[in-house]
Every structure is written in C-alpha cells, then in structure tokens.
Length: 442
Image 1: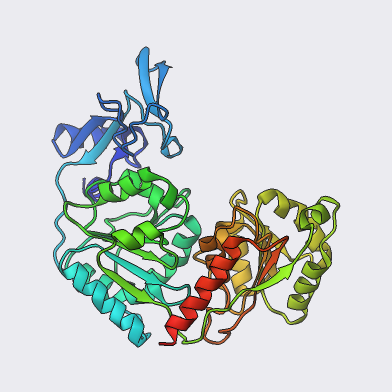
Image 2: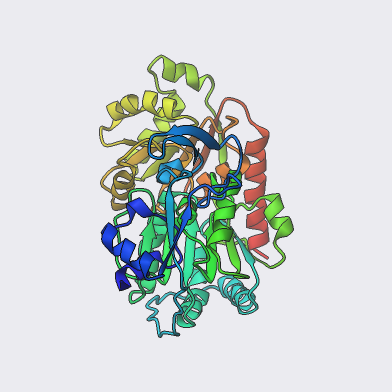
C-alpha cells in the first residue's frame, strides 16, 4: 500500500495504466484510500488537462461501453482520457515532516546572484510568486539552490518544470548533485519509472497534466519558451498541480512583455556569472542560401566558417530554420567532416548526440531551435543560418546566441547571424544583447 501511496499522492492517473496490479488498486479503492472519477466530466471537460474546447473534446462511438463517448484530443499522447475512462487519485495528502536535506553545492554566488536569491527567498517566505529575469549564462539555476534547500528542509514538495525535455535533462543531474540525499524524480516522455515518494520533481510542463494539488512550490524554468508560452492548457496544468495559494516562480532570460507587466515581484540580472559581456552577434550575408542547399552546395562563407572551427578545434552549433534544410545540409557537411551530426526534434538520438558534443566526441551539430535552451557546451561557437527567417523571433535569436561564451574558461565565443537580408528581429535581438551588456556593467 505504501508504494501505491508514494506513487499516487498528488497525481491524477489513468487507472488502467498504473505500475501496480489491478487487484492492489481495487483493494485500495474499496478501503477508501483511492478516489475514482471519470476522465470527461458531465460538463465535457477533461479532468486531467482541464481542456473543454469543442474542438478538443471529441465524440466517438465507443466499443467499450457501446454508446457515444467523448475523448480529449489535447492530451491524448499521454494516454487516452474518455467519458468511460477511470482516473484515480490518492484521497489523503501526504504531510511531510521537516527534514535535514544535505546540500553539497560548493560554489559561490556573485553579488547579483546572491541579491536575486535573497529576494526570491523573501517572496517564498511571504508565499508570493516571483520572476527571475536573468540573461543566458547568469547562473539562474545556482541562485535557486539556497531557497530550494530551505524549502525542502521545511518539508515542502517542489516541482521544477520546463517546456522542453532537453532543459529537463540538463537540470536533473545538477540538482541531483546539489541535493544528493533528496528523493528526486525526473519526468518526461519516455522516462524510466522511479520508485519512492519524490519531494523534488523535475519535469516537462506536459507532465503536470498528471498532477493536482501536489506541490507547495512550482518553478517554471524557461517560462517564455514554446510550447508553454503558446499553450494555455500548460499554464492551467501548472496551476492545477499546486496546492491552494502556493506560489509560482518563473525563470527566464527572455520574458514576454506580458510576463514583465504582470510579475509584481522581480529579480533582474543582466551580467553573466563570470563577469564578461554576452557575445554580440555579427551579421554576415549569405545570399540565396536556400538555392545553394537545393542544388547540393554549401554557401562558401558558411563552409569557410565551419572549416575554421574544425581547424581551431572549436565545437560549434549551427542553427537552421527548418528540419528540411538540416536534412539537405547534413550529407554536404559530412563531406567536410563525417563526425558532424544533425540534431532536431524528430531525431530519437538527439540526447546522445548532445552528450557526444559535450564530451568532445563530435566537432559540431547542425540543429534546429530545439537546442536554443538548456544546453551548455564549453567554448562552443554559434552560427545561425537564415537568421532573417520569420521563424526566428528576437527571443529565439537571443537564446541561440546565449549558448556561446558561457564558460569562465571561454567567456567570449562567436555568434554569427548568417542572413539573406537583415530583419527587424535580428536588430531587436542584437540591440537587446547590447542593452544587457550596458546594464550589466553598472
């Protein structure tokens, strides 16, 4: 029974897909420990993701109950929820006693990080939500450590959520190293099952569909990123996962105007932890680059840039506007160096390839915006092909540029906007980076 409780406390789960025998679940239901509810409510709302749009709650002829049922198309990738689906929750919340969590991070916060960490701690003490607005490479994760340690020691259950799996995979080992004795689960699509009750959860925001009234605090990292910033259901999922009146902490290097306007309590850091300025992007024309790739040619300027990276033994990330263009370019770049890899959202091996780049086993990657966040590679050089393309908004360009110069050993880096004409978004991105550098020197 304890194993079932540890798993279900704070969760809302498909009854037919628990990692426990049906007889054990049935016994817990009969004994009053587990509550059961239908997946689609009488008001035609999904009980898991709270979607109620007629475009997402779809009628169908159900073979199971032989009548017209409804199912939720919005969260179907996490298992179908329908009118005759049973969702189960653990009835009684689990009260955690204060516990002395070990904290093994030996780093030292800069004055700006310490100030932001103290401001965040004060907001959490007052149970207020907070925005941490800090540039790429400012050390946002590290400044969270002291408030996290305090909250864990007070017996609070915490979730750190991010819109993308790559960010979750970057955060998870750093948090495990900082809090080695804390039971922590890492949740994303395809993650392995972890036993025990996790007081600290690191998850993609999609995974929060499966929680309700579970957490005393949720930290949304990269809060401006797609898909979180475009999907209201994900924001509802965060709210649903919180206990009553629990705060939310938003962390972002490029918050939206709306986020800046609505966040009453804010901390701002416009300087990287190592004190060096952010690399300012250089514009480099690459006329008719699409035509070049369509005719199986790499534009000469781009070829020269990659060859120079290889000669200097500098790892590189070359961003492209579409997966189609990446696929066109990959065999051409492999003629220069067969170790160059392509990484994008449809690549099942992308996690392994990023690890190879980090370990220096491959010289560089051709990638999409999937790697614009949550990836830190020492001494990496950044090129963006088609920086003028509409798909690259200013915030995305800033995030991509922010991959360079993150290491104190290699604080400069190079960022090139390869373009077929300078766009307003390119200018906005470069001007904002210059603004950060000016403010960071004050």
